[in-house]
Amino acid sequence: MLENRTVYLDGAFVLGHEATIPIMSHSMGRGSAIFDVLSFGETKQGSAVFRLDEHISRFQRSASALGMKLPLSDQELRDAVLETIRKNAIRSGAVKITGFHAEPSLSLLPPKKPLHLAIFVIDPEEDFGEKPMTDQESVTALVSRWRRLDPLTVPIEAKVAANYLNGMVARTEASDKGFDYAMMLDSDGNIAEGGTESIFLVREKRLLTPNIGHILQGITRKSVLAVAEAMGIETFAGTLKEELLFEADEIFFSGTIHRVLPVRQLGSRVMPETPGPVTRMISARMKEIASGRDPQFQHWLFSV
Ligand code: PMP
Image (cartoon, rainbow, N blue to C red; front, side, top):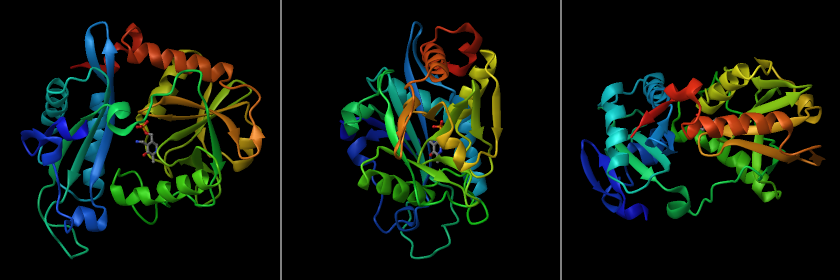
């Protein structure tokens, strides 16, 4: 259970139920908590974290995009993540790193202090009842009436709690209408991303995804593109018109927790084959990589 997990908090290890924050804190009041979510899993050589270096550097980028200061360097953050995993008896799961302002504040301006830092190691199923999806599962999705946050309004590439109101309203709309996930268009009406997922389409064997600019720089997205290229699949990252959603042969979401999530129905459109052949190939290769059975991408794994 989450409350009994060992949590890293500002240089010490405490129990989950001790890692709390005042309701009047700036991060509660204004959503100024930055975070990143990583996954780790079992390999032949023991547990390993997927692309730890990429997640830490994105976490640092979230801080600098908002002018915030983290108390640890990249190397110290990596060590703290690995040490927190070792202190918990979980061999595969997720890690959530959060940088936050714990000081009570009424001001809109954030406190002029380095962020506090917490690292939670999570078993999504045991702690939150979120069963991992099997390779055979797929989801339904709805194109939301809510557009993705525009990069002219806030730094959209920062993983900061306040930005997640956007995905939250889109996903709630989808859920209220009976769909699992939401897809958001950007403010120009082109395909952007899900609430917490990147989007991929396959059309005539080419793998298409929106370019960065209006979307978060997903680490799974970057990995899927690299894997597809290594497999000889032609890729394109650029502007994708909404109509393509209704012409695509295959659609899938990507993200840290589920890696590849095939979409079987989009609005009233039922996809011809789910998962489609390209989705299946990429998903299988990503699984091999995460379990340490792929020498070409071994460097993406960081031993616990
Ligand atoms: N888009 C958004 C808005 C997200 O929050 C996430 C989850 N971090 C993603 C895409 C997928 O990114 P990743 O593959 O790094 O989990």
